[in-house]
Image (cartoon, rainbow, N blue to C red; front, top):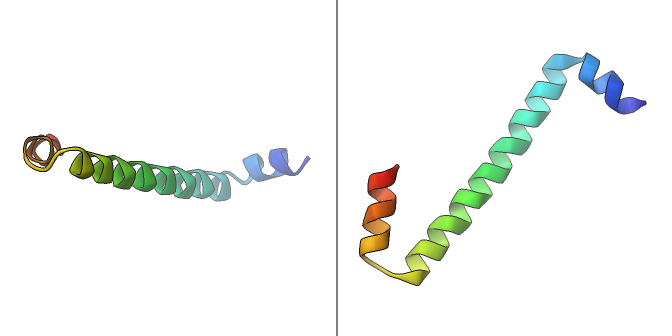
Length: 52
């Protein structure tokens, strides 16, 4: 199977996993920030900034 072949090449697999994780995380953070800002300007935004 191609998957076991990819897993054996650990460097490629870890890099791919890292890229996917980073992409998912950035999209999630972007959507979460957009939701927070749209929901309520002010307190929630300040809490979000302080939470970082």
